[in-house]
Image 1 (cartoon, rainbow, N blue to C red):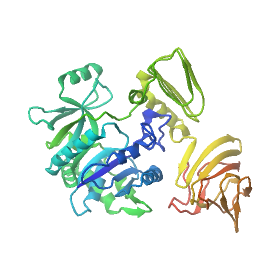
Image 2 (image 1 turned 180 degrees about the horizontal axis):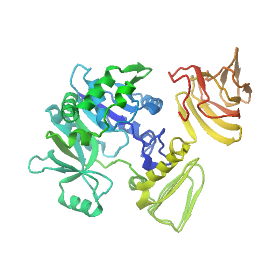
Image 3 (image 1 turned 180 degrees about the vertical axis):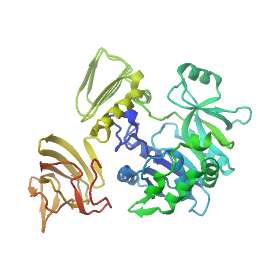
Image 4 (image 1 turned 45 degrees about the vertical axis):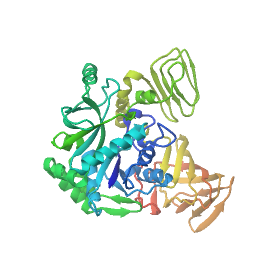
Length: 476
C-alpha cells in the first residue's frame, strides 16, 4: 500500500507578488486552471494500490487547503497542521508516526505540493518502481534527468556501476555554478534533486532515529498529544517547536547507506521562479508569455502578467513584469531568483504586501480592500452559500453593510433581519453581530468601517463555526 504524503508548508517567496506568506504558490493556479496542490492530488489518480493523501500544512493555510481538496471531491487521510515550520524531516516524521497507526506499514510517497509534472505516465512508472524498492527497505529518491545546466537545483550523483532502472546514491551535491553544472550534464550520472521520496514509514523512522534521535523524540511528543479540530489534526505546539529543524536530505538521505535514486524524465519543474514559469508556458512569436491585458511593441522574451490593469511595453527584452491589485514587480529574467530579497525588505518594514493579497481568503469566503483613509475603510465581502461569519463585536469601529448580491441574514444585538439586494443596515460600535448567507448563491456586500482603529485584530469572537480564537490576531 502506498500512502501519499503531500507537504504544503512553503512560502514561495521568489514568486512574489503572486505568492504571499499567507497565500503561497502551492495554493495558486500557476500551470493550469487547478492550483498546484490540486494538481498534485490529481496526479495520484492511476497509481496502483494508493490511499487518499495525508497532507501536512501550515496552520494559517488550513481552510484553503481543505477547501481546495474538497473541490476535487477527494477524501484525504488527514490534514495535519504544523504549528511552526521545522522543514521537511520533522514533517515527514509526523506523517510516518500517523502511518504507523494503520494496520500495515505503508510505503510513504513524499510529494511537495508545488511541483509541475507534465508527463504523468512516466511519473506513475517511476513511482511503481520506487514502491518496489521501498518495500525491500531502500530509501528512494527521484533524480530528474537534467535537460540543461541548471544552477538553481541541488544534484544527486548516482553510482552507475550497477543497476539500470535505479542506482545507489553516491552523493548529494549543493547548487553548482554554471561551469560545474555544464560538467554534470556532460557526465550523465548527475540528476536534479527533485525533493520527492519513497520509503516505508518504519524504515524512515529507523534511519531518522539513527542520525537525528532528538528529532524523533520531539516528533513523538508532539504527535502523542495530537487533537482533532474540525477537519484537522493539531500537534502539540510546544513539543513541535522544540524539534530541531532540518530537511530530509540533510537529516537522513545524505547520511544513510540505503539510499537509491530512480531517474525521472517526466517534464518536471519546481516552478521556483518567474523564469521557470516563462520556461513552461506557451510563447508568442516573439518569445513572450502574455497573460491578461497586455500590449507589446518591439518586446521579446518577456514574461508579462496583468491581473487588473493594462501592461504596455515598448523596446524591452528579457523582463518579468507582474501586476497585482496592490503591487507591481519589474525584474530582469536573469535576476528573478533575487525577488526573495524584496520580500525580506517588506517584512523588515512590516508591510502587508509580504503576507497578504488585497483579497484575503477566510473559511466563510473572502474580503477585499477597496479604499482606506483616516478613520474609515471600505471592503467588498463575499460569503459562500450557507456560510456565516463569527458572532462578534468590535471595540473601536462601527460598520455599515450594503447588500449588492444575494440575501443576508443579519444579527445585531437582539434583532435578526433578512436583507435583499440594495438594502442596508448599521452595526453600532460595540454591538454583538453576525453576518450569514442563508441563500444558494454567494452573498456580496460592501462594508464601510468607521472608527479610531480598523485593524483585523479588533474582533472579539463570541461564537465561531470554524474553531478560531476568540480574540483575532492581527493579519490573521
